[in-house]
Every structure is written in C-alpha cells, then in structure tokens.
Length: 467
Ligand SMILES: *[C@@H]1O[C@H](CO)[C@@H](O)[C@H](O)[C@H]1NC(C)=O
Ligand SMILES: *[C@@H]1O[C@H](CO)[C@@H](O)[C@H](O)[C@H]1NC(C)=O
Image (cartoon, rainbow, N blue to C red):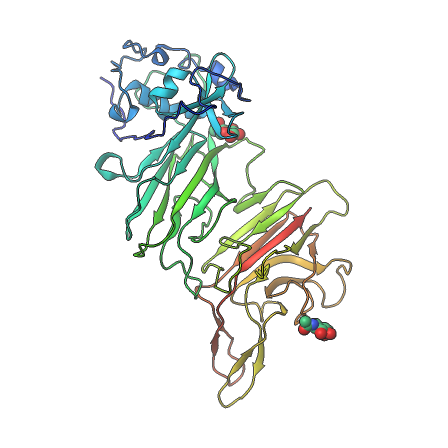
C-alpha cells in the first residue's frame, strides 16, 4: 500500500445548478474551451479514474463517492492534487465564468457545475467553493484547481469569526507513485496566483484608515500583500510564489471579521494559477499589473460614492505595474479619474501650511492642494519615478518629482488643480505607500519637536492610465 500525503481536501462544497439555462451537464451551447496539449499528453487523463472504475492503474482501490472530500487518499484525490494544472481551462459562453474542461460525470461528482462544452465531449466545469473552515479538524478549505471561485456562504457570517481558504500549489510528481509514462514533468509549474475580486465587501476602515473591524489577509506569498478591507469589487492582486514544481507553497487567504453584527459581508474571488512560462506573469514584485494600454487604477477601497469618510487604507506598501506598449513617446501617464459624485479622485494627505505659532508649534492644514517631494510626502504617498506635468517634460528645473501626495496630483506644489503626470522611467511601475494612521507627523526642524495633526478623511486615489 502506497503512502499518500494524508491531508484532507474538501474541494467542492458547491452549488450544483443544472436547472439554469446555461447549466446543461451534457454539454449544451459551446464554451470557448480547448484542451491543453498537456492534457492530451497526460496518461492519466484517459485512464479509468474518469469512468470511476474500481480498477486503479497505480494499485489503489477507488471507492465511488459522491464527493472527493470523503476519500482524501483515494486515486481521484491523487489526480486532483497532481493534475489540476493539466486541465484545459475554458470560459462558459453562457455566464462568462472560467472553468476547467472535464467530463460531465467527473464534474458533477466533484460538485462542479457544467456550463457549456469543451472539445472531445468534455464540459466546461465551473468550480465554486463557498464554505468556511469545513475541512478536517476545521482546517481551512483547500483549493487545488485552477479557476476556482471562492464565494461567501449564503449562511450568515458570525461576528468575531474568520474564514480561510488554502490554495495548495504542488506540481511535484508524488513520491511513491511509479513515474509517469512517458516521463514528463507532468504538471505545469505555477509561479503566481491571481486573485480577481469580482465581489468584495466587508467593513470600512476606521477614521484613522485602519482596518480595525473586518480585514482580508494573505499569507504565503513572497511579495508584500497588504491587508485590505472595505469595498474592492473589480480589484485584483498577484501573489508571487516559488516555482511550485521546486518549492510547493500553500497560500492562505483569510477573511477576519470584527465584532460588528451589522456589516454587509460578501465576496466572490476568482483564483487563477499562472504558469511559470506564461506571458501573463506580472513583473517581479508587482501586486497589481495592468496589461491594457488604457484603464484606471484605484487604491483598495477607493470608490466613487458620496461621503467624507476615510477610505484610504493604512499600511499599504505595494507596486502597481503597467505593461509598456511599443508606443512613441514611450511613457506612462496618470490622470485623476473623473468622478460623478463629490468623491475625491486623489486624496492621500492634507498638506500643512506650516507652523502658525512657534510657541505652540501648531500646524494648519491646507486642503485641496498638491504636494510633492520626500520631505512633504513622508506619510502617505505615491511614487511616480521622474514624474513631470504633461506638456512640460523634464528636464525642466524643479519639475520632475518622484513622490506625490496631497489632494491634487501636480508636479507644482501647493497647486489647486490636478493635471496629468507622465514618466518615461521603465519598467512602468508606481509605488503606493501609507503609514499606520491618518495622523501627519513632521520631521524635527531645528529646535521644533516632532508634532502632528490629525487629518482624517483621505480617500486614496483613482487614476486613469495610458501607456
Ligand atoms: C489557469 O487558467 C488560465 C485561464 O483562466 C490559464 O491562462 C492558465 O494557464 C491556467 N493555469 C494553469 C496552471 O494551467
Ligand atoms: C486656484 O489657484 C489659482 C491661482 O493661484 C487661483 O486664481 C484660483 O482662484 C484658485 N482656485 C480655487 C478654487 O481656489
């Protein structure tokens, strides 16, 4: 009897929805899926595990079960541990959801939902996980399949609780199993995981910008991933991991819920695994990566809604990267978004007018102007390396700055109008950093002690970009 790594996978506690127009298990209207070359070359893909024959080519006795989770050490589980990345990915032509090409029986046994068809009579199987801590010994739910949707449960969420999901990335051939025939590296090594927050609403930060109630956190990535809260529909994150064929990593995604009982808490996160040789890989260290030539980038929890509450989040420290297009001039330009409410499109800090009284060292805030440079932007800021006002390119004396803050985006300090800031520094990457609160601290100047004024209500930014 071969020894398999004994951990429990509770993969698919899912909504099986065959009643919807798009949910035909037998195929139905086609999905735009293809089987990957890996899948065709994979000897296990066409082996009896698919027909749920008790015979197992590697000596296991497979016992049919309605859910893989009940047979954590069975061959089906082995398959899913080690073959997920060999499945062709597909997109449902009905719902636009992403999935994996599977035969319909496997899809339904796994608790997936067929939505459209792939080639070779396979269905586009949509995988949804929507429970918390249901696994063995209430361990986190585990995901190993590419293109899995993690959704909030329809059951009410208890205050002061948490909900975790483990994303297991292991592309090694299992020790103890006979080597594959023909010999092959078998499973696509994965180097990054992309999270798409299709729906993401948990509690707002407090007035000091701290996610002191609910927050979402990621463990296991090699890049810095900030804790976030609030509203993040449409946002994404790239989680960098060591090559999964060499150093398999578990990523842990956790929602921590505060004590409030009256929050709206809902999420739907698409988890996709990016192969190490994929052109879709984000550049090194980038938490966000934009590949289109135009679009908008928002800080987490920025939203165009009426209100004066703090929306900026504390302790952010991440890079936002943009794919360079073969354009001339080769530059990245950023312009604050047009808003339809009274929301501020650029609101990182409130500049100070200076010391009113040396005796009391009182600082006076000046709202709605720009600030630049490392001395003035030393709390919350965005770094646009060598940024200059459009139409007034560097090198013009005193016109190119790296750090921007305040409430207007402008390379001219204390300006009351935002403009477009461009940079020619490649690779295109900006850095966003906030400190632990919304209280401004000033460096000691001569005999004046460090002083601070509370400046609440910053929102972060929404910037339209063009490369
Ligand atoms: C996961 O699916 C995406 C499409 O959604 C695909 O681009 C990617 O290559 C797949 N990852 C792996 C490891 O097969
Ligand atoms: C912005 O600054 C300009 C030039 O200093 C000034 O003329 C204008 O009144 C200011 N606008 C606002 C809204 O303060």
